[in-house]
Image (tube, rainbow, N blue to C red; front, top):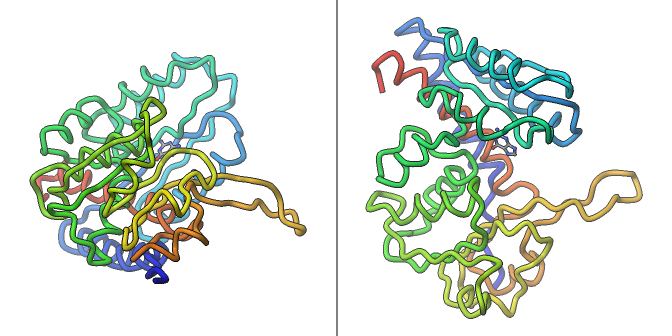
Length: 295
Ligand code: GUN
């Protein structure tokens, strides 16, 4: 069997078209322009690229976008001051503070200072708690994108054996939580495996849907999956440079080998990656609708 490719690039394009139309309608019918503020502290090159794409995509879709590039040397107090100002700014519906923050800053304190109604990352404990009880306003972007990939490529999650590899707060724990809810596009039997798991392969081999966010290049090999599995690879690992000097990026799954056993699989790049930004846009639109009472 050679797997069907689940293209995040294609699915993302579809959702962006739907959202662009919705944004135009919001403006035409209600005079509402969703607004997103992105905050980047310091000059980490990968973070600059991520924040740049978030800003560019939001502008392309008709979202009002404000970008704040703050020097590495900023103090906790100054950063909290900016968050407070954005919390009070009616033009801003979503606030994204790119993480990781420089070491001298208290990341948790900054993220918790964001008004939960503007927390389009879904990182605030109020939103984490709401997700846990099935009442989320904002799903965190990468897991929300993974759920959309499954739904829009026709993968049935209800009753499926899902195994999640990795227990991060950004991907592993929230995707497990999303898929176990008694809701459409969810209702799965979910297992999380992690660095403390005794026999990872014993679990991954049972999976009908395998979601990998382990942060280890090509960690999942063909002998660790069963025939007919659906594989979602959230890994982004830079493993060197090509002859032309470009980063070589691979996922957490040994794609070439695993695709021969899988029913469907996401590529890296072009799988989960493009979905994350798209879901940020979806959350920003939702935040604007919620604050205006039309969600
Ligand atoms: N750093 C890496 N991914 C993310 C994300 O989804 N949101 C924020 N705020 N920072 C990140």
